Length: 171
Image (cartoon, rainbow, N blue to C red):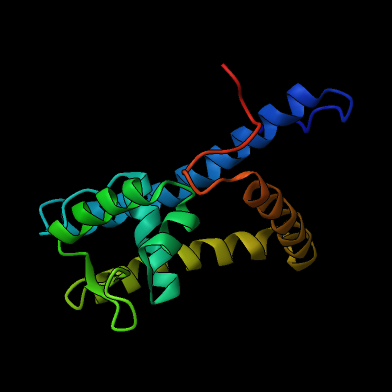
């Protein structure tokens, strides 16, 4: 692993953060891929993209949530989230239903048939990260959580409801 860059070079710091984030995403996806290797890629669920896997884990974490809430968690537009949910419903991983309080609202949840598989995947991910926390130590993990909370707040403040980020990149 490379050294942490000098605090004076924001470009190098940005690259280091980006690379570290990519390694974490790769670890998550490797857990999912290893799961498929053991349980077979020919399950009725088939393979998932990383964004689909992320959506699945978000729904698992919340139990159920409105489509617009899922879009916000994924930081994508509502139509993008809806298209992703459509594919996951086709794979019988998610279920969607109309809200009883407001029929215009759609509620997304893990399908009954997929619930044991998704719970097992979540347990594997948590187990992997618990091992990481044990290795880096509780104090470092708490500091990491504090920093991630700040990063999350900044990212959320830059996110707009159209699924884009305000003022980040201009072409």
